[in-house]
Length: 464
Image: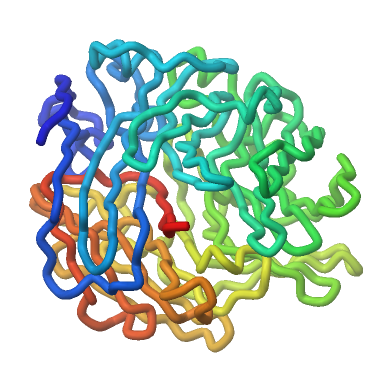
């Protein structure tokens, strides 16, 4: 059942992130009792939700970067071995609500109102669509309806973050918020009730982009890397974060206990990091696993000459040095994920999306058919060094999300979910893989009634 429709960019739009598998969809769809090939594990009871840009004509026409499209959340409800429903919904910012002929849900606005398009996080009974760089997150309902912008009951003085880290043992959510309007970043802690318990301002130079960070039991780990705000890029209508060779690349440690606003900084080789797999304490040392863009990388242009590999920084506070180790020689890997239950603690397994080849865009490699996609999911055993792959023969894979078979199951006992996109552009399935038979046939393929554009990040939100 279609519930809303709005004109979208045309198929011959020359912009790469509005073509092929990235092309926005025109309709909001609700469908029930989805067809399935295979069997949905009966223990998977919850919602798989994923966010991403879905460019709207009249709102996003002049936006020239993939990160800037209005957010659309796609979701499936799984229960008792059935796929009960699929929904896709635009996040109703003020502009999106107006375009759809609806009344905007009133709420606070900081800096700028934006239909959050990056991630979905759940904590203390709320589901938030997140974004970074200034705008507030938007709260959505279990059925993806927009509730409104959310500032944690007025306790959030500025922006939030696209990526958060949840320490489930302490029931804390941590975030690093940045904005081009501020000469500092903020470490934000949310307690188990969903209230802001601490905000710490941390001084940094040049207004760097901090898309992600890392968390251990002892530390918050900051990435202060040479991609910084550019007023010239902003005036030119470009995404305003560019490579800045004069900015010293470094990673920083902040104690979680004393909330000191002064990190201890450690120099690293020039690089950029969008995403963290995980981090943990190893005695006095700190191990941080990231997808690392080697050498120069320009976020504004989304280009760079070097590989993107799954690497480990080992930070030694005693010697003051950082050592680097690569887990795989795959040229391009992104969207790293682990079992979210062990964030901030020692992990063994992690998942990334790998890409066939690299041509025009580092983050959007082009396949021979003219589409841009990743065609392999990788499972890394960071202890043994083994790498397993699940290959999509005529398709593309989105980010892999781990779903445990139960709340008390071991790290590797569960399933891996990802959207699988047919390269012809007309079909999308939610694929469920058994983590312990990763290269094998999917346990289930849930066939969606509508195409899902390639997008960003999602979460498995288990029933409480």
